[in-house]
Image (tube, rainbow, N blue to C red; front, side):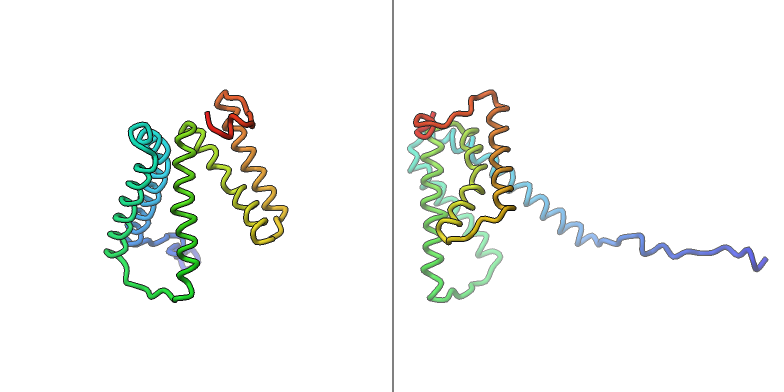
Length: 178
């Protein structure tokens, strides 16, 4: 009967087609992100253990050599040289000095003075310090959202400390290390 013909619906728009190449690329990216998280998480206990076995500056020097070798290998395997403008070198060197030398020395000295767990909790406050330093150095106004985020971060750190069973103290002895 003509009136009762079966209707056919095209449901192809409901099916998402993902090629094997895209799936493979996504999986690779996710595994690399997982590797970053594991490496970052292992940083504190491995560094703390290593500091018990060797001088903190020797250890930090070894970290620099290993990191430089690894980054150079990755760079030369995957990239082409990009010319850096002469005017950019000052900013690059300044950022490299702060991020690599000052930060790493402060990290290792601080880690040698407290536990790996305390160091990780203290590092969790770094977004707060970044906002405050940026406001001070660049005379930028801190928005309400930034204050909210900073306070939320600080509350999270406080909850971690309280949840660990330790007292929440801030004084001369805590500043020097425990």
